[in-house]
Amino acid sequence: MYPTQPARISKTGLILLALLLAVAFSAGAYFRHESYIKKVSFVTSGTGTIKIGTVDPETGTIKAVLGDSSKVPSLRLHVGQYAVLYSAAGFVDRTALVTLKQSLALSLPTLDFSDAHLGQIKAAETPAISQAIAAVTSGEPVTISDVRLYSRGQWAAAHLTTSASDNRSVVLQKQGDTWEVVAGPAILISIQEHLDIPSLIIRDINNQ
Image (cartoon, rainbow, N blue to C red; front, side):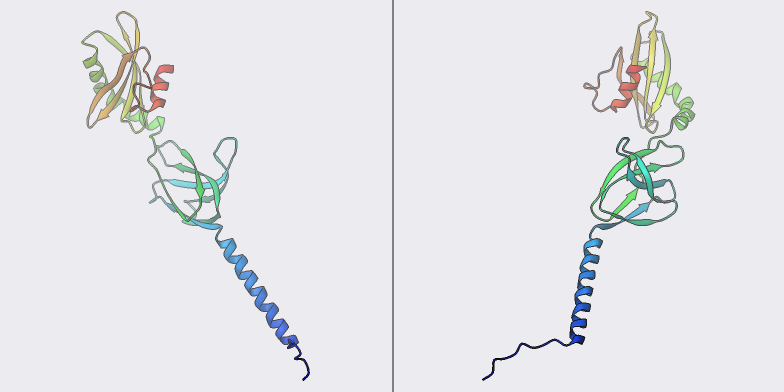
């Protein structure tokens, strides 16, 4: 018997095999690429704007905008870290860093009122704030100054000067329709003793 000769692949078969391998390689590359692409959706209900972009390493803010909710409802981005800017009229902008590992829906968080907006509502709140301060100073003559509102108008702080000319500070919180002094009067208000008060308020009133 003659030894069996290996089967020869025709020229057409070689071409088909090459095409199949090219398609398989392209499909694999596509799916590998797609696994690193995720969808980012914006949910704003028309009340504000969300922007996402590359991160400025020095400031942690957006270096280059890649998507804007006022222009597109969604976009596709590579897996990685991005900076997000939340903004709305009458509120303070907020920036956050997000790590994109899977498809993500971004919605507006609770933003603080802007200083201009807080200034507009301060006049209406000042009488109740003064009344709450008078309740903790036992009727002693007190001059109230530097009244400031914070966040969404539910926090306030002020400086007090008594007849003895000593300066004190207070922090108040609005609970329902009533203002209550929750820290002070004191020369310095301790952050450690008032962990329920936002630290930025205490730092601000202590540094004024």
